[in-house]
Length: 211
Image 1 (cartoon, rainbow, N blue to C red):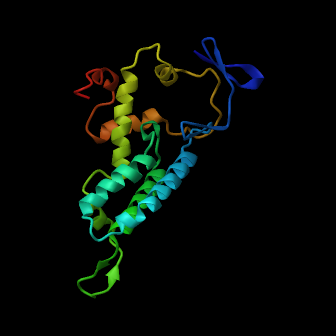
Image 2 (image 1 turned 90 degrees about the vertical axis):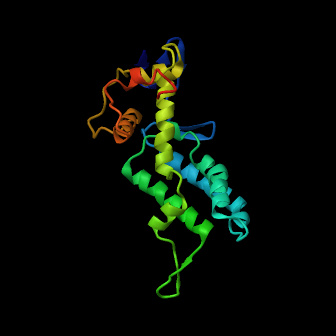
Image 3 (image 1 turned 135 degrees about the vertical axis):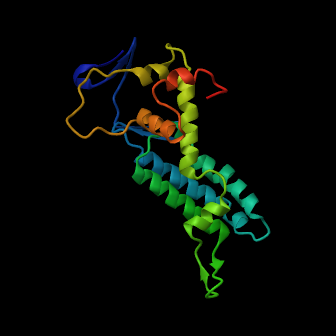
């Protein structure tokens, strides 16, 4: 059980006590106490840009096929940007921002296209980028990894710390403000999007291969 420890606002879990911090980093992941991942996304995109610049000359080469460039993008850049994304909860604004980032990366990789009608060079349209990048888009990758992590957590034993945090019910009352979207809310939305009922999803995912 998680309880409030008075004025210090520490968190107690069994015999352990954790000091409440507004912001800290754990394994390069930025965590804040406002149930928001904006700073984490900022950090991930910054790291992704650094990775892009490290392989910029390779991605700009006309000797590489588009498929090879996509593989480099997934392996070198996308893996850094989406580190730990299974625990993210996204709102529409953040999802759009990630899609804009991905499209910008793809435009840098593939360069401009000559318009057949005017003969002028132009930027690739979003639909054209989707055709070139036939794999999952960045937001769909996040949803896929989030469902996998949800199944993993749900299959954990009740004594595992992650499972305890997930099912914990804080005793302190919520402030009178708009309820923010939780990670579990995203999971339910993801399941509905793929036609999976949310009523008994925890029981269903006990079969790992089927899940």
